[in-house]
Amino acid sequence: MSRLGVNIDHVATIREARKIDYPDPVEAARICEKAGADSIVCHLREDRRHIQDHDLRTLKKVVKTKLNLEMGASKEIVDIALRVRPDQVTLVPEKRKELTTEGGLDVLSQKKKLKAVLKKIQKKGIGVSLFVDPDIKQLKASRQIGASMIELHTGSYANAKNKKVLKKEYVILKKSARFAKKIGLNVFAGHGLNYKNTRRLRNIREIEEYNIGHSIVARSIFVGLKNAVKEMKAIVR
Ligand code: PXP
Image (tube, rainbow, N blue to C red):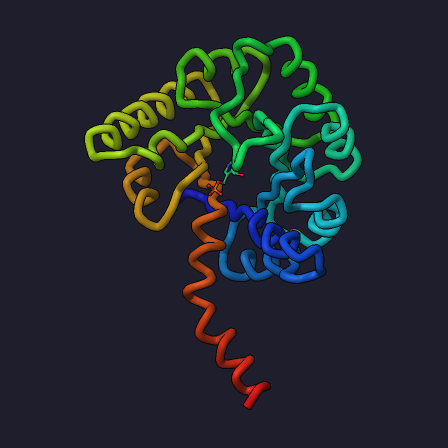
């Protein structure tokens, strides 16, 4: 059985659209755990567009399962991670202008820098996962610099325009997951996964954990909208 990590960033996105104090991503984390989430994932971005520093500090106190902090490898954010000490850090590439994380970490071209960051974080007893494309060279490089876990970027699979591309991307993910496991890496997967495209990946036994955010927060609108309207109607009536 694989685990599900729920990314709560987009609860904070709705809050930050108004710069007020709801909806609270920490409350969302509580609900996700009650519903069976095996971990809570959040991304502290350099531009703080959704999760804020205070969210992270409170999540550290409140999350009972595993707190997985996605972050770029910049000094500012690494220092925050070392102070807050989430259970796990997932290193991702980060560009300010991107809508969401585009592509995996290029471990190959930054081996030295990433190795140093990895060591620094691991030394504090925090597990480190690297978010990488399903690419054998990147997986090898991840192992070489001392990673014990990786998250396969499923974006190309999720965004496949037709069945042929989908099949091709699925095979790439499958081969990559097998290879990663063979060289001793724990294998996770995430990005763009939804209620349609996740099922097929369950055939890739090597994937131990799925990290999913946007589709779950989006779906919660439609499974929750009816009650939300009923509650307001009762007040207005
Ligand atoms: N995993 C990683 C490493 C990510 O950067 C993201 C996006 O923040 C996710 C998983 C979740 O992606 P999505 O919101 O598309 O489910």
